[in-house]
Length: 123
Image 1 (cartoon, one colour):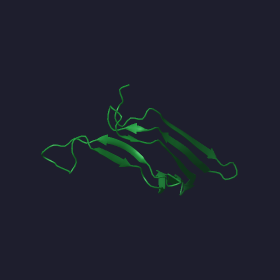
Image 2 (cartoon, helix red, strand yellow):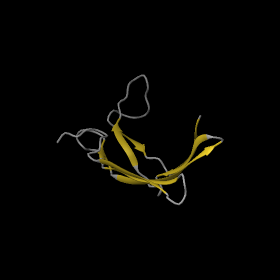
Image 3 (cartoon, helix red, strand yellow):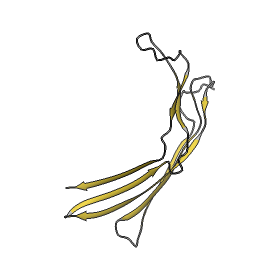
């Protein structure tokens, strides 16, 4: 079987958005993202493993001074999973030598736990 470099065979995501009935405008958010293993080249010599990460958050929608306003809090990679998000084989040229040789694997490190707060106002 011919492999496609840095392309997983399976990638799946599931997200949920639950509006709390007892607090007007407040919603809880959650999701899971799964990625199967990937290969750096077509022969499968270099592989990175599969991973799953969990994301959670909340959203509060209200009106401030008559304008619809949304406050958001999200935590991506809730459990701070260490993972490799991708891999590829390097190509070098004489104009920009980076210390790699042609065909060396280069890895893309997945993001650590990330907390984001945002405010959106529509006017």
